[in-house]
Length: 174
Image (cartoon, rainbow, N blue to C red):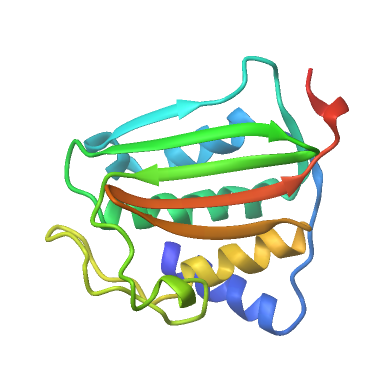
């Protein structure tokens, strides 16, 4: 299902037909909806750290959940059972920043600069995972950019870290 969803979204993006249906969305709800779509996360140690105040973002909720699913799906592929996956959200300088860090094998140096391009995959997946077709992160980049945000990845000494920002208004904190 995720592969089909990614292919459909990529064809909309490439044809210029990606339409954003923005609404005020609760950040916590976006995260927990994405988690609900990935039962494999039950085999990981997922930690969610969001501000105590209710944090709202003006986004296309369905597309933002897709971004989270795609990044978390990668975290599942490149980690083992019981590895930690941290999801952190902060409101910084009129930007809502999402950070997803895992304790997996990290990002290969040969692809780290190209990881958000189409059909880029790493052969370093864990034994119980299937290799993807390399569209998930390219779609994430297109969706984040369509929202006026930025996305990047870092290879950490103990895993991978994906960060993206979405413009916000400080007044959206409740």
